[in-house]
Amino acid sequence: MNTMLHNPVLFAAAPDWVMSWVTTLWLLSLGCTAGLLLLLLAWAVMWVVWRRAAKLVPLTVSEGVLLPVTWILAGMVLFAVVGYFISAMPNGLLESLVRLPLGGSRTVTAEIPVGAVNHPVPINLEAREAVDFSMSSDEIVDVTNAATPEEQFGAAIELGGANEAFAWTRRTTTTVLLNGRFVENLYVTNLSDLPAKFTVKMTTGPVFPEVKAVPITAIAVFCFYAIYLIQSWFFPRLSAIALSTSKSELAQPLFGILLALGIFFLLLFLFLPYNTFGEDIKMLKDSGLTLIMIFGIVLGVWSASNSVAEEIEGRTALTVLSKPISRWEFILGKLSGILWTVSLLFIFLGLTFLVVIAYKPVFDGREMGLETPDWTSAHMEVMLTVPGLVLAFFEVAVLTALSVAISTRLPMMANFVICFAIYVLGHITPLIVQAPIQFAPVVFVGQFIATILPVLDHFNIQAAIAAGKGVPMVYLGWSFVYCLLYSGIAVLLALALFEDRDLA
Image (cartoon, rainbow, N blue to C red):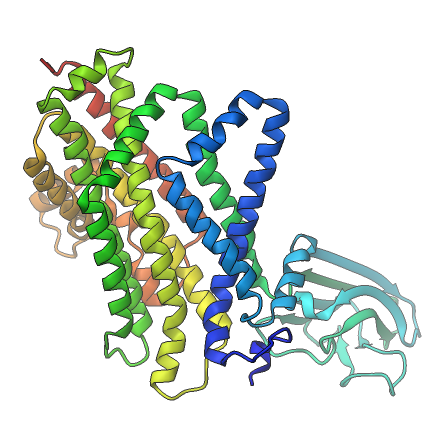
């Protein structure tokens, strides 16, 4: 059995492919569990300092989109317990998780006297946690990892003079100097006639850096609940409209149809032969992200037309606005409720998609009769996919906001046509502007459209998928700002169109 897939706590050894598949999902479930514990801790603190709001939390969680999300979290907590027994290296992963905050960079500098032999330089480095390690000297020195030849691992390393500085990273071959053990001292022999300035630079991190997914997932879970609860506490009338809208849309057959079709097609994509000579997972990612995004857009546009346009035409909006609710609260409440509904669809389909992505390397290896891939390859593919889901949601949010604005004046069919046109133009405009043939009228039209309409191609990561690259956090941050900017413009447009709309 692959040592990386060894689980010492298994009562009955699970197949390697199961551990390779499950480990990444187990880390995500640990993150969900940590996020839930963080929420419970925050609720306990609120019970002490703000009991009135704390008493409303159970009621808020038990209705709307938070109820199914809470059930999903409960399932993830259960999987976090069960998954411990079928994951690869669970104890090592938990140890890395505990030591995650202890990593960082250090520099050790020592002066080696003339004629010094095996001069000890304390570094106190757990070699398994070394991320990168470098040594340099301004004079010629020999460096070993032990004071005597009998204890020494490997040959001495000569630095200084014509020799380049020694550099090692975790991605390179393991250096014999560290030898995967705790190194208390390095021993330096000065071979020159002058004192030598010896410098060691090192960066440490967990043995399994993949555990960084746990706190990221926990923060995401906490923020999801926090945003919903803050909205319900500080904007009660807006939140009431959002809750009513989300309940109404969840009760519509379309949500269940899209959810069932989405899960079916995502599972089907796993077994489809893409004939890409080992690059099937890239096609799977592209197909899955596009499917989830399209289904999200359909749900968002349909919900906007159903909850805004039809309520205006059916005079339901007039009844709602006869209460102490302003028009801006009505529009923002509708948009908020639709986005919460779309986010629930994304959570269901996104989790299904990540399960499929985690299994894809294992599936391809078994189909081709190859050795079971290490669990870290499945983890890498999953982590490269998550930013794509986030960007897809940003795109759906922009189009949903535009759809709400359009719904204040136009019916469903016109809404779908206009949103489809915006979707197409938002993706092809960059191609027109950057076309090698610079035909002035076409370039002008392309630049004009790119100015007044959102460039949705910013939310597309097909190039990153094709290159097997990740999406930088900075890019995600600016994409979020771009999403907020255009969504805000769409909301202002909706308010302007709705403000003087005669509802009678």
